[in-house]
Picture 1 (cartoon, rainbow, N blue to C red):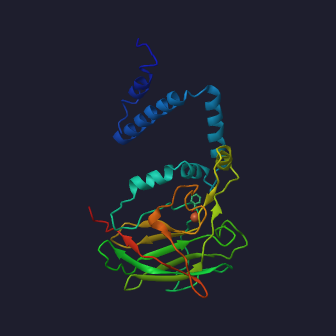
Picture 2 (picture 1 turned 180 degrees about the vertical axis):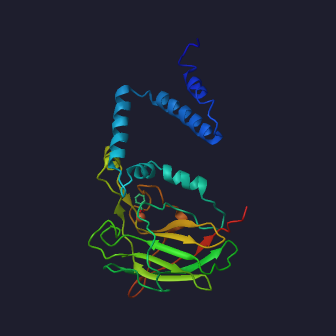
Picture 3 (picture 1 turned 60 degrees about the horizontal axis):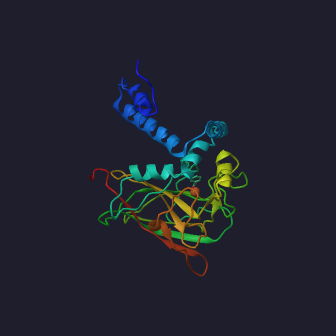
Length: 276
Ligand code: BEZ
Ligand code: FE
């Protein structure tokens, strides 16, 4: 019988998965075991600390339902979601960088006309315009552009029963020149949901829950990779400390003050789906 020692323990556990017939599952579980064991050894995790960790994960699961997904929030606040984004989103030098989809996207929003106003609540008016182009600068006509953002009170329609259906959500198509335009509001920063274990984790670790002001964009066109991204306001106090690490400097934009509104001009560059 093989003697289980501190030195061979991890390899013994990994060996227990040697019969796994699905290679990708085997690769993932092997790496998971190795990293988990290393993690416990590195911090010399105590039984009490692990019990606390299990209680935290249990509470995280209990907070989840059909709408609320506390595990995604945990993944977001640990920076894990944005690591996955970096691994999986294709990027070329000229293409627009991606950012987190977040939990407040929803489809089924009514199509609006070029230039339409998507705000049904009060706030600082803003006009967004630009083009959807490919990496060579050629216009992408007929691209589906979906946008969503919070109201001036920091809440998304859907979180807030006082907002009209579809408030601050838009669905447009780019015109023949690849152009899009819509009217909305200058967004405000807002806290991610804090009434669960992830909120308590943020407090316990001295972190704030704020996302800097942003407008989400999802842009899809036949023959192109779908782009999920967001535009962040350069004047936001949280732009350097997003609670979910979604900000990239290339996605930070200025809201240029005009007489009656702010102007934001921004092109989006898509990558062709077949480009290697
Ligand atoms: C959002 O931007 O909508 C969001 C992203 C991650 C967690 C919570 C909210
Ligand atoms: Fe958001």
